[in-house]
Image (cartoon, rainbow over all chains, first blue to last red; front, side, top):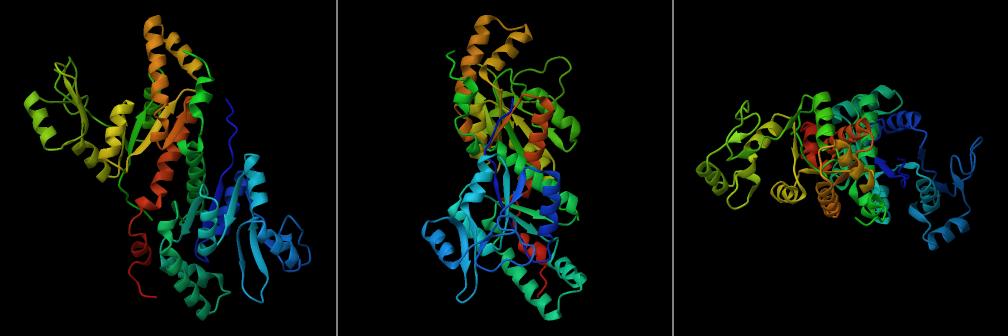
Length: 208
Length: 208
């Protein structure tokens, strides 16, 4: 019995260096029905970037019109900088097809998405400890000591937002983190709140 | 990194004939850390029944004292009949050890447990359809037509309680239902609400 269901929006946050990208890539490699959200931006495409794949490239006027039309789950604009935003249309279209959409986003953006889309599944990927996070940042070999200090301080601020998330996945072993993400998806699809009209579906309208 | 966590209380309801017992037995066979809740009763032990394994056998006085001491998650007493109840102590002791406890119970009892234990995970096992449930009851070959009619009518009433449960697991293929139960357990252990003091644990109290 195939139950065609609306896909989930998985909002994924976590400190720099925690391995969000690795976990999400591994998850998507196993599940072709999972898509990464595509952001809109006013910055110019870089060589090789494809519109609608890497970003939706927009002019400022187009972006402003989308803001007016409430076409974003969230957007960010720092004065004098380029705009970035998450278009609702892409996320909704994929979910309607039954695909899940992952949106990797910082904690501030995540809170905006939660407000705009209350049925989003909020996942925070945490390091086993701040000490290990620091070690991972050092291990990259690309960060200055100052950058590592700033990122570790930011990580602590981000961790304070944990109670605003539904789930915490500790990325100690990547495969285990991926398995937890898979379980979260499966469990969320079983939530009664996502199974509206189950009685009429189950009874098939039959009289007993 | 072993994170020793309190086990879950999984309250499982579902109509007669839906296969609750089959699903739970298969789940427990795969997971030795899952226990079945042991009920207390005032009825006499039957040959072979062991106190503390099949039931906690109690006198009426003992049972009444436990009621007074608020020692039950729920209990039921129909005038002139034996008492049945779910002792808190067993459930709590197992959960403290990190074991999960399954409590198979009807919808009325389940609502009492939810009130007494708000962090219980409420799972409703549903048939793919009422038609299939009827067929399963007929297939047992032990039910009269009248009994089947009563059970199907009761099933419909029970299904109306679905919104009071956290999860609906449709028992179409047993292995799939078991996999969904496993995902629910894993996901619930990731819920931020069950991970109190994560920040202090993660930072290990270190200053940054």
